[in-house]
Image (tube, rainbow, N blue to C red; front, side):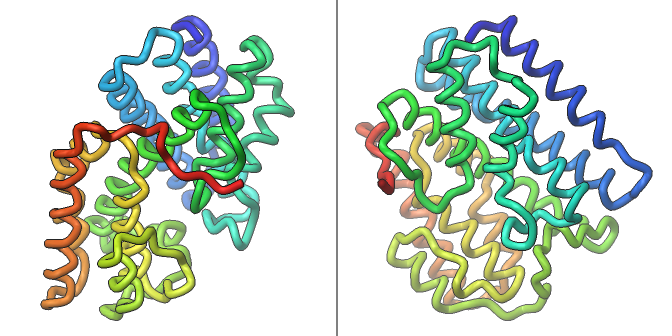
Length: 273
């Protein structure tokens, strides 16, 4: 993909998002939220792609995937008034349907179309599914990393502004109380990507997001997590006790280890067949 084709996709994206602008304050708030999120994820993808010395075409392909990865969110929030896939539709699958129905990718080579759709449909899965080739796997891992980085920012912004600018869509219907799951803490201390079976509170959801550290693939991602102090800032949103302090130390040690791993390679990522 070249810069011109990327800009064409960007124009389509901007027009598409504009079609969801609404007088409904809840919908408007969340359409803007996801539009800005998509733009920042695109910026994160560009940083990761540049750090991997990708060629011109692969660089713009990575940016295009990032820009379009959440395209299903706009219809989801407008139609269902929620970001919970379990109470609406899988937003990644919905996004793929929209891109196909709108023929957004038809000017791209078939191989690039397949990579875009594969990466988008896998960006929110617990693990990447299928048997992708090396290039498709690379791009799928890249969008997953770029997305996680900005979700950290969204979570922190929401926590800091919850009283002045509440947004129930980001709380996923969970109570904002001091309780949290020691089972999730235990999974994190075992370097596991935590599932949602033990999620009962907003703190639990933040814990599962901290566990995303074990699903990241690129050195630049770990560098940006450290540079933006996401681990320490997210830990600060949790109850402060010895268990959480131990968790913080564990996560920062893991981050240090990954930054020192000179053989870190995204193409070694695990998938589910």
